[in-house]
Image (cartoon, rainbow, N blue to C red; front, top):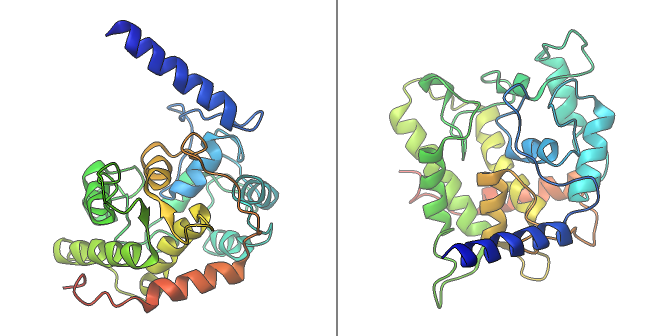
Length: 255
């Protein structure tokens, strides 16, 4: 048993060294580090594409991170960054920077019905919530991918329905659920963003292990086979994917 475990650990270590770009190995945050409700930003900090502390992040850091790690056009998230500035979310003392945890300010950028966080009403909209995430993971079939005959990918349709069901769950239990226009666009937008970030162009979908690593470990799934897309992603691509998510008929999941 010990020798088998040692072999598995050694193989994992070899795989990690083989897949990670130099200087961007994965480290979980330290207790004093800042993290956000957004897995994608936390992934960047955990790999050093953003400051590993998650603090004093400026626009140039965001541009570098999304480009180098995910192959987004550098200016793709400029509008989102400007929102954080306009909403005066920063606690750094510098209006042109923010800490990742600043983004947890409720009903600004953060919204109810998160895929991996609980609602603000229940006391913690910042940290990963395993119980919430498992309801989503089950709907995505993330723990079924090893079974014979089971689809190995998450499609836009599956992701859209899982998102709608999670929002329906939140509405049922949160008496202060915000169903504003911002919420109704932001929720499918977050699903579109993780799909586009992890998109496998050949499959036209996202491999289930990639989603698990991204949300549960908050790491880039290099070990699982993730590679940068050949085509650079743009803000237009984000908008187009959001439209695809919103076009899925989710009426049965929303009741």
